[in-house]
Image (tube, rainbow, N blue to C red):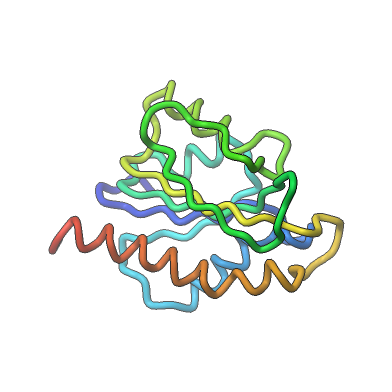
Length: 162
């Protein structure tokens, strides 16, 4: 899946751990939209090797993931651009054991970062076993879908006609 000009949109998480499934929920909605052919949607459990494989060679990678923040505001969205040098530690952490930060740093060291990487981290309220997002996180899904579509459109416009 390493075609030049590819856009990787990755929903990270676990749809069976309530709010940890927000990335998957955003991708499910995006799959119903008309996206440019260079946009490829994928879900991932957060494994750094798999993340790197999904975004390797992409001109743009957009990652949507649940995050824990202390103190937190469930449903609050953080937009991070992580492709410029070392990763600064944001006030949130991934809801997975090994976080996105480790995947980004490993990809940077290996020279496997996409040209541009944008992460949307959504503060969650409930990561217990079960399905369905908490109300605050569910309310963030539609605006996230619009934001990711905007990232894709800006990237396509900047690239120009194929």
